[in-house]
Amino acid sequence: MAAVGDIMMGSDFPTAKLPPRGGRDLFAAVAPYLRRADIALGNLEGPLCSEQTPTKEPLAGRRYLFRTPPSYAQNLKDAGLSVLSLANNHAVDFGRAGLEATRQALSGAGLQFSSKKGEIARFDLHGVRVAVIALSYGPPPRSIVFPAQPLQEIERVARDYDLVILSIHAGAEGRGALHVAPGQERFLDEPRGDLVRFAHEAVERGADLVLAHGPHVPRALELYRGRLIAYSLGNFATYGGVSVAGESGYAPLLTVELAADGSFVGGSIDSFRQFRYTGPKPDPKRRALRLMRMLSAADFPESPLVFGEGGRITVKK
Image 1 (cartoon, rainbow, N blue to C red):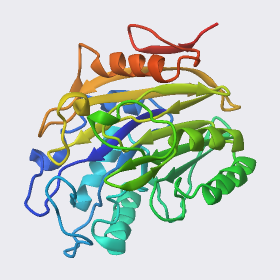
Image 2 (cartoon, one colour):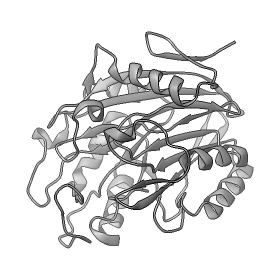
Image 3 (cartoon, rainbow, N blue to C red):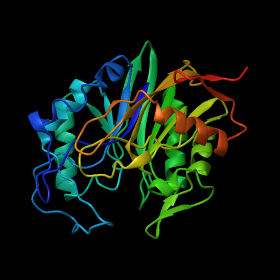
Image 4 (cartoon, rainbow, N blue to C red):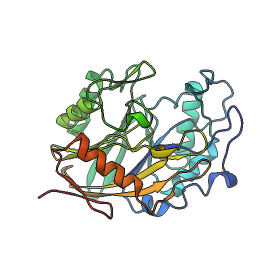
């Protein structure tokens, strides 16, 4: 399993800020890493559509809207991604019509997806049945702010599948949110969920891998009951529309190997870095790895994860 954080391949609203060559080069440096995985997941932060009517007005410093051409779905496929999360606060920037156009664009490119509407992305790998479910904050359904319904769904799905993987968009935002905060997190006076409690309860209900994003910075990893939890994978490919200053520009690519029963076998963090109006590029200083290793030790000192200098993640014997 390979996983990355937020993806927004450029926007043509309210003015065009799109990459050259239709974005076909955005993932050139990372495609070899994504293509070698059985499943590769990212969070698609914004619709792929041509709808003209936004659902809200942009507000500098507080509210942003994204709209990416539907043709860019092929860039995701060519990069090696296989499933996208659409459960986030930008999926309906252009309403239900924009979200439906996104679904059609992804399906047309041969990509699976999951959103708050209830889709389950399904894979059969080496005889192992895998379900991928996307969740977010905000109103139900599939909101970790209202955890009863999604926890019931996770428990139900775990009875029908060998492995259950969660993609969760939640948590406070920005460079002040590097550390995982206990209890309910908030951003701009909005509840963003108790990510630690929800992740733990989800594992107890049958989730085998929890991959979070939303804070726009990388966060800690934790091993809980033999299952890996990534509390934020940060930004990954956010061309021009999201700040990539400092830690916001660190773009980790997490690879995880799971046993057939869902337990964590091992993994790795490959470090990339973004600059404004670029795609992710290899970071020889391995800033994402170094940051996530430090945060993991600080936030979850009892977790038995060991981070090697080359990025390999193992479990302490």
